[in-house]
Image (cartoon, rainbow, N blue to C red):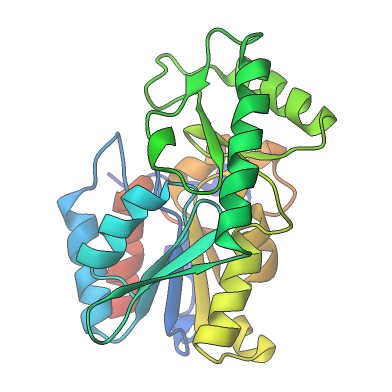
Length: 271
């Protein structure tokens, strides 16, 4: 069922001119609650990824999810690569089938930083017994994730916000996704690595970012992408976060999560 989203103040995707997207070749997208919905990947969404790839689009998920999870996605999904752990690393499949890891910085130093950061976060979490490390923490190479809404049910929004305030007071980089608080050390984020990948790996110019790259997301940790890519789309469930966001997407889908992404694929492919 289509939901009218006029109360958000964002134009609906269905009202956009198809000419606006005529030069798009690269689709960067968040995963949790953008490609997924209610803790699963809808069949329509996976099919949409395959249809888009078959039509020549290069799809690059950009996620705060762990490198272990992203490794599987980069190898087996119909995508060109995955930017993982909030911009720490780009995983791309080479023509010979091997998977290549490109880190933001020296990988050994990034992993050492993570160990120190994990100690700091564990100390802070003693004051937040309702929160816990994400279950995928063991598969993270460079960052720390705290679960507030994935396996923590009901979601702990107040504790999340208090944790963010505490971490920021310690000078730690931290942002909330729809399920985790992602915590890292280093001057990078989703956009910084996306910029590096698009310019160094694919050879795009800054001007080409304006009309050949699209970004799709659902949460405040997507703001750096919404700020930089004019062709940005929020899936419908982003509406719950808009009041707290400075940088919003340019338009919004009628459906939530992966169903909204499939709606976008239908629009781009004219079906």
